[in-house]
Length: 108
Image (cartoon, rainbow, N blue to C red; front, side, top):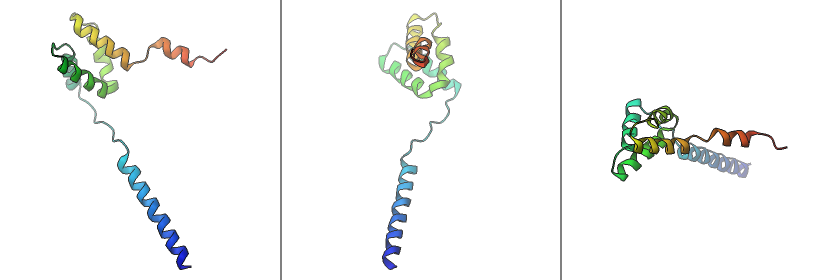
């Protein structure tokens, strides 16, 4: 009987440690981004400094869905460089409609 208690305690301890490890290591959701922050990142896309542009791209990727509508608006900007970068980033973040239709269609 004492051996059974030792085994049960070891299994219980391993389970608790595994549960704590899973809870600790899982990714935490990113905090929501403010619209003003998204606009600031959009402006960085039009900067002449490539490092600042990369910073803007990374921030917009991280913002995810919150940056889709502002990127659509920026892709219509009279500033061609900004519009091109916004369009490219938008295509990267949002799969093409045609691609999703062909992949979701059943095979013949």
